[in-house]
Length: 383
Image (tube, rainbow, N blue to C red; front, top):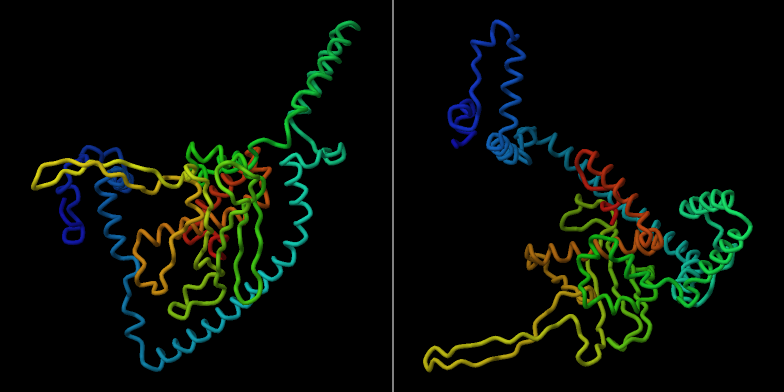
C-alpha cells in the first residue's frame, strides 16, 4: 500500500480491500452527508487503513509544532523562569511524599497486632472465639434458610437424626490445623504471582506461614518484604527477605518526570538450600561433537530453572543507567510492580485474595482505569 503521507487522498485506489461505493445510485435516495458517513465507516473498518492512520498519528505525536522555537528571546526567558518554579514545586511535592511515608510508618505499627493474630489463626496457633467469628456469611445464610425449611417438613425422629448430622458436620475438620495452603492459595489467585509459581514450588510454599511488610524510615526510604517459613526439608532459612529502596525527590537528570515516589532498586537474600532441593536450578546434559576427530562427548551443565524463588535473586541495577538495556529494564519494572503489589494489596488484604473477593474489586478497578483517558493510574504514579 502506498505511503499515506505521500498520497493521502488515494486510499481507495491503492487498497484493494476497500469496498467501492456507487455514489450515483445513492444520490437520489440518500443525502450526500449520509453517503460520506457510510464511506467513512467502511474505511474505518478496514484494518489496513487503520494501520496506515495509526502509523501517521505515531509520527505526529511528540513532534514540536515550532511555536516555542519561534517565540522572542524575552518570552523564552520567562518560560525558563516558569520551569524553575516547576522544579521548586516538584521539590515541595517530594517533601510531601516523604511526610506521607513517615505517616505510613507510624500507622504500620497499629496494624502489627492484627496481622500477628491473623498469622496465628492461619497457622493454627490460636483458635478464634465465637466473638472473633461473628461476621456475616452469604453461604451460612443460605444454609440457615434450607435448615428452617427442612425442619418444617420432618418429624421428631428425623429432627433428632438431623441434629446428630449437624453435630458431625460441626466436628468435621477438627483435626485440620489453621487454614491449610493459605498463602499458596493467595498467590495462585493473583495472575502476576501465579505465573511465577511452578509445580515444584507448591510443596515449598505450603510451608509459608506469613508475609509481612516492614517500612524503612529515615534517610533511606523503602520497605522490606518478609516471608516467614516453618522448618522444612527444602532450605534451612526460616526467613526470606526482599528489600526495595525508593526515591521520593525529583531526579536531577530528569526533574520534570517526577510523579511521586518510585522504586529505584531492590535486594534479595541468599537461600540456604538443602543439597538436591534447589528448585531454581536444573541439570541438563548436552552432547558435543569434536570438529576434527568426530568424537562425541556428553557434558553436564547447571542452568537456571523457572521458579517463584528466583524472586529472591533479582537483577542488579547498574550504577550507570546508560548501561541498562531494554530486557533488564523490563525485568526490573516487572519486579518492582510485583513488590509494590504485595506491599499495597496482598499483605493488607490477604484473606480477600484467599477467598477471591479482592479479585472482583481489582477487576472493577481495572475497568475504571481503562475508561480514564491517558496517563498512568494514580497508584502507579506515586510508586
